[in-house]
Length: 218
Length: 256
Ligand SMILES: Nc1ncnc2c1ncn2[C@@H]1O[C@H](COP(=O)(O)OP(=O)(O)O)[C@@H](O)[C@H]1O
Ligand SMILES: [Mg+2]
Image (cartoon, each protein chain N blue to C red):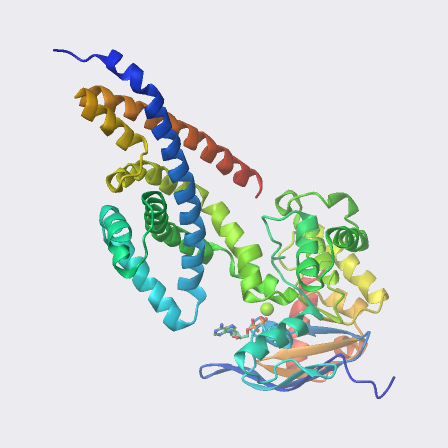
């Protein structure tokens, strides 16, 4: 018995639906990971020392443990202390926090690479440290770090498949549901792969555009 | 006029890095509208003194006053932050390497601080930017990015950015040292024009000709001390100290 991709056709609608959820989870998780990355990076560099060390410990823990475990912890574990997130929220939170720790690393390096004179120029005008960071330092750090941050976003897209295990009906879970009805794993996983690939192409096109913009603006 | 407070007064400034004394009891008064040049060999403490005036490099001893406000007043951290940010709005500073914000247009460089700190709107800020750019002769560059400007133009934008805060005094730390020789004059012209407008200025410079032409008073520093000061004609023509003479011999020779 060979492969028969005709079996996929009736399920294309639900796979497409799953792909839409993958895009939504990726965008939301990505946005959270960038915002969180900036907050963690600034806190790890500039917060008073108790906060700084707390954040550093948290970053170290989150980077050093598997995303899958973190998703379980957030979705199943937090219920014990009364935080009952739905799968969708838990998935976005897990992905977002996990990648925020990677982004924080990149952004910290980016902040440190911004010329010291930029902070001095801002402070000399009368801006506070926070204002200077927000308006002058962080935008430059993000600009210079666009390529590595983009790579993290692509990794996040691929890891979004993991949220299927807590029941988010994204692309991978949609494929699995179809397989449970048709017993055709190859056809559906391969088709899901094509969907991921197409989403990835779209993401890369957007990232490429952002990178070109930031190149021009220097 | 005579008993008016100086705009800037430095009293017995001391600064050390570990065991190294970089400023050793330096005092300085700058009256309103006065233009003071600071000259001296590299490492003599000129930048440190200038950067102490807005507390970018805090002193280890002594006082800095801006009119009747003590710039380096010892305050609890919270209050110090608010205090220093207010004081710095009145002290413009221009750096050797311009330090323009590369991600912002010329307009953005000039309007950022006034909009954030003076509570003025977009429209008013844009007008302010245009005024200040006209002052430095760069009205046609308002929409350029810093990377599209020459060094001389960058420094003039940096001056416009500082002027947009309407400071009471302007500090220049070797504003033309990083420029190609042919771009020095355009920046000097802007500074001369500020002098004619009676802007109070403290200018660290290695250009003896400029100091002589533009400044009311010249301070010669060496090894953390003000060795000699006076009107340019006196300091340049009849220096009293051997160290001043040696320094001037070297630097006037280099000039052609
Ligand atoms: N952050 C620092 N740590 C240690 N020494 C410093 C620091 N900044 C400046 N110095 C020293 O202070 C002295 C005066 O420096 P500076 O004020 O920059 O001199 P100038 O501007 O006259 O060339 C120099 O000997 C310099 O090496
Ligand atoms: Mg210097």
